[in-house]
Image (cartoon, rainbow, N blue to C red; front, side, top):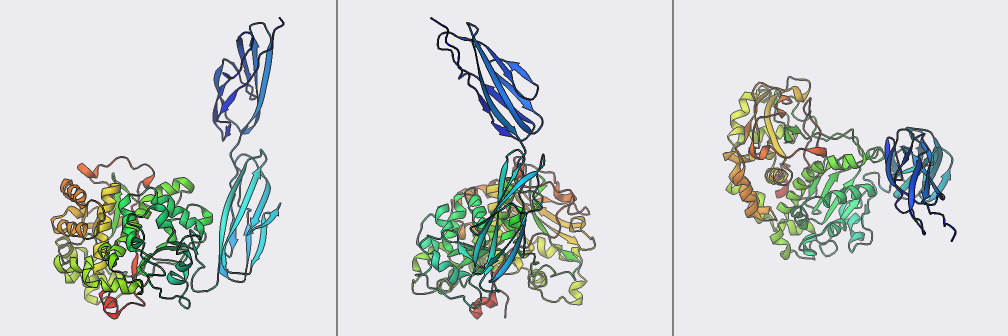
Length: 588
């Protein structure tokens, strides 16, 4: 019978990507119905050739390559298969908006001219502006007549056919006081209550009953990530996306803390983050969540209102988190997935701290006592004699009135006296080091004291981050160059602190408290800092045990200059609260 020709077939893995690109070619799917294939000949389209059923080839330059496989059978018949392989760095789309938000009606100009293509040129711009398509232009203008959050999508295509897209969200306000906010899950059972009850602006804010918007723990014993996300209110959808990605990577005990919440708000204008007993919600700074330039562009540039407090003083008590002798720094130069990885400890720290406030003001043990006809504040105020921070202040109090008075300058903005301005670092070492605070912020209120303790142990237990605290001078221009008079790493193991830490674990930790106590039992003593050296130089401390954690990977950046003024923690919003509670918060 006549010879039947073979059939040529092959796969390429990967089938495209940026150079240098090594591709594995596999012709094992080729066949010969009446014999066998004796030869595989390859032409890779970049002057390289080869033989064999499987073979690799590397493409060093961008381009469209025609790969040809020729197979020969045992009777000399041949067959050929071809395919195109695109080696290409995808273009980078960028959107700049002016303005980035505004009150309705507002006209916004969108500019894609900062888009780029590393190995070629962009040949096509396609826009979708709030559902209105535009093609072929780098600049578009759109008038937004109604309040809302509007996605603007840009797709750019390069000369090799590679396409990439980016989304910019425009927030159009109905109230100049706050951004327009939307439920992250618009179909959730209480979605319609989130905005009016939690973040609608001063004029529109209403006090809702817990029947209209209940605490999460009255609905769920152990909230899942999906459950938590039903109570998220955002000014831009990407904020909820970033939060969700983080929650999926954080431990269960954090989600258990959300039982004491009504809502999580992330909005472009919030700074600093805060807890508000009036609503039973936490309000988070979007600076912790952005991943792209388009997302960063909408985050407020306003400074924390406390940023200038304490500038008249000659000492400061900075803190930072350190892992494996690497300081935790803001990953400002990272974008996309790399930034998301490095943001994890930032968001974890923020959530541990703010959720500690929620669990303090509305203890999980009190959720069964909530009257659905009352407001969140009614339920919280009814628990005031059971607040863990009140019990901590009564049974394990901070002893130093001196430090508490100084904290008023740094955290409440009280004007300093001449005598206080004359204080040097050595003048406060004894008062701080022999007391039970884990950092200076603990002296601002009993509520921050408890949240600082709880956040500190959870960052160590779950993420191997140790808190540094030091007393430094203010003569250096850069905080990293400040000279350390006294300092510790891992202060929660200090004999003055550890019993207070155990009290907090028993009071609000929702996981296995005995396991956490056991962790405390195995911790080494605090590591002292080197007096006379800078805050930056003290990032690297000799020590063993728990302080030698696994490599940090993408969780932080190496600190060469040391952090500047440490990030300020969130605060407690005081308006709309009972006078007695305002007094506890240091407000007359």
